[in-house]
Amino acid sequence: MKVKSNDEIFEFLTQYAKQANVELVDVEFKTGANPELNIYIDTEDGVDLDTLEVFHNLINDPLDELDPSYGAAYTLNVSSPGLDRPFKTVRDFERNLGLDVELKLYAPKMGKKYFEGVLTGYDGNTVTVLIGEREEKFEISKIARINQAIKFE
Image (cartoon, rainbow, N blue to C red; front, side):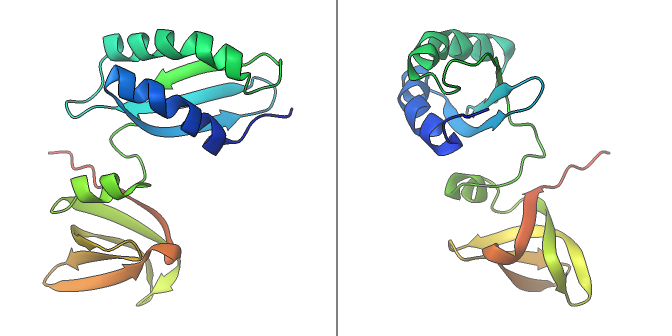
């Protein structure tokens, strides 16, 4: 199945996100037996069902005009990115400064691939995480996934 790129769809939807006063977090087109276009949005106060419905209705007709699947059928899903979403944007890193994060590396560093700590810095190329009493720097290109740590108490 031929589809337009996620980046092209993301760029197209940016104007509608601004109009709806939501942050467009990610776009993901999954092909296969049941193709899906998944749109992830967020707001400063989180996302509720009404916000999801309003944005879904706002983008439904314009997406038909864009025709991201070149006429093939797909399911459109609009949802929140979830608490454990991976950080992808500068805004993701900035909003999580001072919070607990989980970090998974492609290759071991200091004999480990998994770290937990407090995100204390981000400069576009590296993140700094306070692990115990020590700050450790990690290159973005070597991070497989970084997200907010979810703590159950």
